[in-house]
Image 1: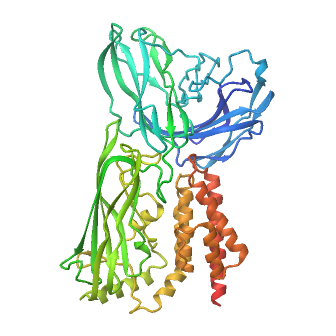
Image 2: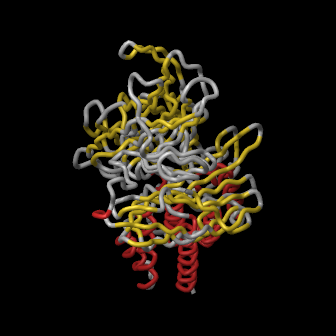
Length: 629
């Protein structure tokens, strides 16, 4: 049943419910908070429900935007999987939801729990992979009315009946049945795979519109519904019975992040009992499972789980921008690195060595030029092209490091590496426009310290789009806050080339100190940008990047890849007090460990972490200024 919340206003409705109010100590209950509205803003969990009587087995969040007859509404479901700790009358306490401009409190819910020996044999928890439904009026098996969420993937929006865990799983010979298809029963850790559900309808039944629930996959699977489902219909004969097969009524791309057997949840579909306007019943597909194998031992240093693929090929060319050659460059000239990656896979990123840490070059990009990514429900393949511009800032002979990426080759079941480069360049003398460019860049930087956000040093290049819960397959993957901010800063232009936001040590001796003094302001602005994405999966990595970039700029510590322990030693060398450097190292450790959490970080927790980073920046800045005095 779903219990109404204490407030409905401003075009928002908040309800909390649990799939049953009678359970055993072996059961896993599904507690759901549903928020539906058309008002401005979003819904966030302001205060957690009191679940001290339960062990939390996991949680998930589902967001949807629904358009119906020209009207749009937003819905959000916060789903908790709870296992009773003891027998007796247990209580799930009220939760507070912030929706729009107001807060809403849900009602407390009581559950009568018996121990396992007292259970009459029909516990709420299905066998592994089964579904557990939330009835509405009437509750229990066969209940209808506003639904909640069921174990194993029976979640729906408010107002939709939920199938019970006991709903039938019809087979060949019945008028309707649902089958699920998976590419392979075994996959590697981090290897995305495709899951499809097909609906079989007897050929004598008319075409219908079917209500379908979304499976609630376990925490061990990162899930994504393809943005452009490829539906299809074909005829098929099974045991002498002709069926119309409605292919892929639901399709998902799943990426395993836990080893061992992982359950693929059943899908429930509401179908008519007879023909035309007859009453309707829920049916369910069977569940299935895949076995997630570990990757081979000794992966390359820095290997990204999810860098998997086959037939991957990397191509890159370096050319001078303008009339020069790579052996005849002058200060102020630029070279352009054009990179192309093609094949089948899920490569998330590549690297260009320590180019961003070199004083003789300034890098700009990467700029994604084109994506030709195709998802056909068995694989992802295509081509990604992007460009990186490098501007020569000093005289001398230099080497531009190679573009590389490590990946797990699915065909060979081994780690492989693709590499193109390195390239040698010779910079001699100053070009005719070098002084003007460098002086203009220095003046612009000084004038815009209070307004512009400087790009941090670049180390990673985007690969073929890795499918994740956060972004569709055909969009550019560079969603980090600093890249978005970089693209918002208009670059200087000169002679048709991408211009430089650098300064000349030869012409502007005080610019380096001004840069260091401006680092605190830049970090503060970056924090404000991160504050707009609180609750996002990337918020912890973004906060970590802000703090590390500040240390690089203000303390001149190469902190981008330093561990917390080595960073603490570097801060000690910079004269930072023991207590402060220990707290900074601990904060970075916390941020970077939480950035790997598959469930992400809640908005209140994100806000608390942002406040901690803000305080650390202020203390570090105060310490730096005190050292200068």
